[in-house]
Image 1 (spheres, chains in turn purple, yellow):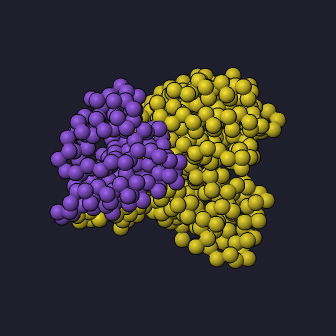
Image 2: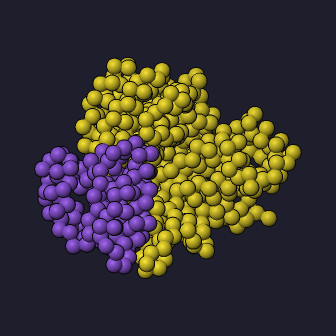
Image 3: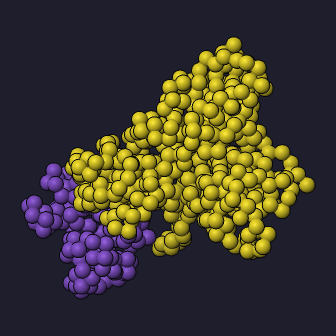
Length: 137
Length: 453
């Protein structure tokens, strides 16, 4: 265990259950304590879970194309709830249609996310980045 | 003859029941005014004298007692996030038979310190943080509680990593404090039993003495329980025979609701959200009482009551004399019946789970928050307000939601009532003789009579 706690879940009305289980397992194997909120998680649930568990980062998954709508305002709500500066990560099929990922990434970084990942990203990539960001690499 | 005596030291009346273990029947019941200000045994003696007058002089093989005298077990719950550890703490305290006057979340403020001081709780359940989770808030709150003047004990049921530190802070402030297991050890995992046991132990050690029950407790064959806990255990016992049930107890100060069922979703495609709730759940509504909390109840039921001169007169009468029982079928009795129905309606609505609609790419789906009670087969009424109303069935129907819908109240249950207030007595008996307790309940929990014209 590396002493870092990650809150993760699938945001909004999205019911894709498999990917988040794989991520939770992979991050657990990599030494993180994972708090997997499952599917259909609201912004408030992410925040409340992060407060109680003193999470070091929040990982948001979105597979159904409505990620932009669901994620907007999460950073501001974290600030409001006292989770100032908590690292936020997002990944999946974040938008509908064939938009250039650089453009999508910019959208999410502008919303206050620390990193955004395109479809097909391996768990190892995220584990490496987050370990580095949290100082446990 | 093997006769067991059960005693319920209530806030107004001390109620006794003599139960014969051989014939499995209640020999006699009696009551007398509770005498908390002199010696509580005087009221017990008076009740026993009345019992002997009815059933003849008898000896008891065992004496069992519950008490809600002196305001019952008054508690405050403190947690971190309202929907998580604060709720878990409140549920744990309720399940131990406490009257949870208020639940606080996040860092306590100076105004909230004052509020807790004014509530004058017997016990405070302090939670916050999962094990290894947030530490700052429970430590802050331990410090704030240590600063409050008052003779209360604190049960620490939060993040284990700082439980000892919280204890030391409280002890430094001259507060009695104990540590027990976290009410929410991991995210969304409820573990209320350690807190429930800690509350029971402190009730026996401290509250019995504080409420002047020490001498009475020496007469008993087993520790005195908080009355709501005895009622709760009665409800759990009855559920072993009847299956899942909902019980509502409308009293002078509070309305208590008990549900014994897993409450899992019964509709297809419903996703359960939020903190899981216990199989045996008790909730207590401090603002829904027929006498001591009548003002708050009248306010909650304001949509039913126009503020007439008659109603104002009724309220004044109740305020002056909380033991006031209106003449049957009088206008005041009708006020009581309507208020009681409102208390049942609101209290069961707060206790029940609800559905929230959400729209997904696959169409409409539902979240379920709390317990689904829709398929419950029995709703049971407890307490004089229900029992003595002209139409108990109509009052109990307020605990249902026949058309279904968002509020997951029972849809079409059968109604029963505890006409002789046997729940607490049976709960006490169940600790020493479960089959006997069940026999007594089956004989005395009966369908409501037809409405009086």
